[in-house]
Image 1 (cartoon, rainbow, N blue to C red):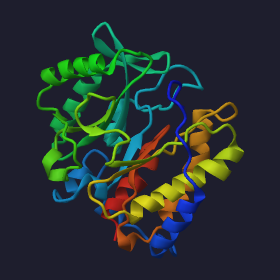
Image 2 (image 1 turned 30 degrees about the vertical axis):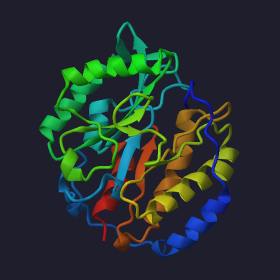
Image 3 (image 1 turned 180 degrees about the vertical axis):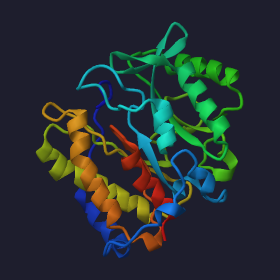
Image 4 (image 1 turned 180 degrees about the horizontal axis):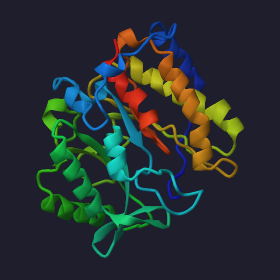
Amino acid sequence: MDLTDTPISRRTFARSTVVLAAVGAGLGPSVQPARAADVPGGADWLGAVSSDTYLSQLTVPGTHDTCSLYGGAITQTQTLSLPDQLAAGVRFLDIRCRAIDGVFAIHHGSFFQHIFFGDVLNLCRAFLAQHPGETLLMRVKQEYSTVPAADFAAIFAGYRSKWPDLFWAEDRVPRLGEVRGRVVVLADSSGLPGIPWGGGRMDIEDDYQIGTIFELNSRKWPEVSAHLNAARASSDPQRLFLTFTSSSGWGLWPQQAAQAIAPKLSGYVSALNAATRPHLGTVPMDFVTPATVRPLYALNFAG
């Protein structure tokens, strides 16, 4: 649940029908994915992927509101710490920054998450130093503050100067070999360097205001599955697909929503034809565990 965003318009089911027809051949009888022995551990899976691969040609597990471990049932979205998420195989981070006194405090809505942006960067740098074949995609977004975009960008520039070799911030989708050991910036504020969030290089599904389990079944999951189909059908290396499985509402809080959608996502993944090595794009989730992350990154080694 995002406490400060305005709702994102939902996608039509007409698109779902068209895309499903385009990629239907990839869905069929369940087949065995790559053997467990052929799938790397969560801390090093990207290191086993060809350096020529565009980030858009991968299935990348991620977390929605990555650092939201505090604030109660309506605000908390994760139980694993950032280092534990990285070790499990998470490679997309959703970092929400409150601009205050010239620094970024990490928030979910009004709730401070007991960590600052500098802490996040130190943890990412330490992980990448130990696992230099990996890369991280990081959404940087202003949360619970309303400073002008130029001021927000200036604070970010200060962090970038202190971590000069950590960020990759060009406006294009790179190949993996270009960004190993680095953080790829997905810029969710005007004036930030990187790939603009919601711009022409991104296709995002994030219909997060889901009030009941009935809406999750009738609206959220059809949107998620249609967007995963669109990611599989895409052949544009300069277009990133991001499909948020997370949602929350007045009668369905984040953990309940995560528990309800997890088996649907698992069923979708297990029904894919592994021989086609389908790529689902980036899939941010709530309340991730190693068991929910591994089947997604394992798709990069199927077939």
